[in-house]
Every structure is written in structure tokens, then in C-alpha cells.
Image (cartoon, rainbow, N blue to C red; front, side):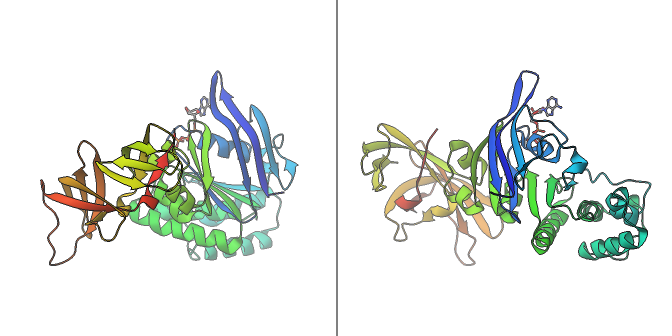
Length: 348
Ligand code: ATP
């Protein structure tokens, strides 16, 4: 039995089903991200686990015990919100100690624990400040310390980095992950940012329209997307239509050339997905070569993103900005190398 078991979870607001047959098992100490576009239901799932929202149906088991009827404060869960939600009239130390005080801990115990928590988040000297005297990143660290102080057995993070600027966001995500690993605390993290989910998680649940479309490790989700939605939402993906010549072995004609996938595909036509980094300028020993005409050149610094027209279908790919080498120019005819093993068959 996993630490957290969610089965057949459903939530409707009036006639609208916003979470549909959601199932997930989380092991102790795992870091799981719920990733999806705005409105897909990820916050609603998190709020049901926290106890702020009652499921329409389904079960949520923590350590084998159904918690659906328990109030949030009976679930031993720590939560951090996008908006920090610190108490403005309390000092940092009082904010961090708040949960322990509510639980009736003595002042010496609270002082020790608050000290440990401020040390953990790297702000040992700021206990006497008020939230308005802190930066956004510092406030979010304090919110994390407040959530962790009562030693919850699970941590729920609802878009905790979304309100911060890009630099702080990257450093705080590394910090959150290292604190989570140090404490070994089971964590569910809600985000719409694929980079956050890919870089932080043990596993990702990609959600779309209330449904968990795929659950897998970051590399599974990126390399083997299970649905068209996942393929399009996570990372950049080229899609190419191909004519099926022999469905049993996956012999196809794409962009005027033949290639063999060596795996069965449906009859007729198939949509193939290909990551930009799997396309090389020049055949470079790849098993399939297509020709195209450069239609776009975007200088991005260390890499140059190019687009080529393959006779009605466009493909994006990158080349390194190598000193002394001129990148292709608009209108130039190029040969592109692809590996049939990198072609994903996208099913609906
Ligand atoms: P976001 O990133 O924008 O918060 P989300 O994926 O977390 O999106 P939810 O907040 O879970 O999505 O919302 C899912 C759907 O449920 C949305 O269409 C939202 O409008 C609706 N919804 C959420 N809470 C309520 C509520 N209390 N009453 C009615 N509808 C709600």
C-alpha cells in the first residue's frame, strides 16, 4: 500500500465535472507534480487532498486511512500557497511558530523548532522581521518554514513560485527540492510550468480537462508522451503527417522519403512527433534524410532555432551558434537527418 492512494476521485461544481476519475498512488518521500494548463483541475485535486474541498465521490487514503471526512487540521498536512498567505501582523518567528502554538506546544519547544526552521530556509537572522519587510522569495521561504514546522507527514505546494521573478524562481525551486529531499517529506506540487515540473519531480501527473492524461517520470513524459495533449504540452514537438506503406513494420513515406519504424502502426496516415533536438542539420549518419527550405532563423544566443519547409510541412530544429560557422540563411536548401527511432507515433 502506497503512502497516499487516490482512487476514482471526482469533483463537480454544479453541473460541471472539473475532476474526472482521478487515480494516483504516491510513495513515501516522493515529489509529485500536477502539471497542466489553467483550469484543468490541479488545484481542485490538491484542495481535496488538503481537505478544503469535499470530493463528489472517490477515496483519498493516507497511510491506508480514508481521510475524506477529516477536517484539514486533522490531516497532518502542510500547505504553501502562491500568495504566501503569511499573517501580516505577526513576525517571521511568530508566523513559523503559529501551527505549533495552535497545537499547544510550549514556548521553549516553539523557540527551538522556529530556530531550526529558519536555519533550514537560510534566514536564521530574520525572525524578528514582519512579512512586509521581506522580499517575495523570502516570504515564500517563511511560508514553507511555517508549513513544515509542525512536522506534517505530507507537503502540498500550490504554484508556490508563480508570483516570483524568474531568477528567484529558479533558485527557490532548487532550494525547495533540496529541503524536501533532506526531510524526505512526501510532496505534491501544483504548477502550469513544465520546466518546473520536469526539473523538480520524481514523477509528473499531466492533467487536461479534469483528467490525468499521463503519470510518469520526467523523462517518460518527455520522451514517451502517451497522448497528443501531453506531447504538445510538454516541450516543443514537431508534428509530421506520414503515409503508411506497410503498417505491420511501420514503413512510412514522410516528406517524400521512406523510413521504417520497425514497429506496427495503424493503416492510412499517421501523425508523427519529433523533438527539435532529434533533428540534425545534415544527415550526420542518421537513417533518414529529408530535404527542406529554411523559412525562419531565430538567434537565441548559444543556439539558433531554425524552421524548414519540407514541402508543405514545417519542422523546427536547433543548431549551435558555433564561432566561425555561419548558420543557414532564409531560403537555403538543407538536408536534415532524422532517426526513425526518435519518431513518436501520436495517437488521439
Ligand atoms: P489554475 O492554475 O488556473 O488555478 P487549475 O488547474 O488549478 O487552474 P482549478 O482551480 O482546479 O484549476 O479549477 C478547475 C475548474 O473548476 C475551473 O474551471 C474553475 O473555474 C472551476 N472551479 C474551481 N473552484 C470552483 C468553485 N468553488 N466553484 C465553481 N467552479 C470552480
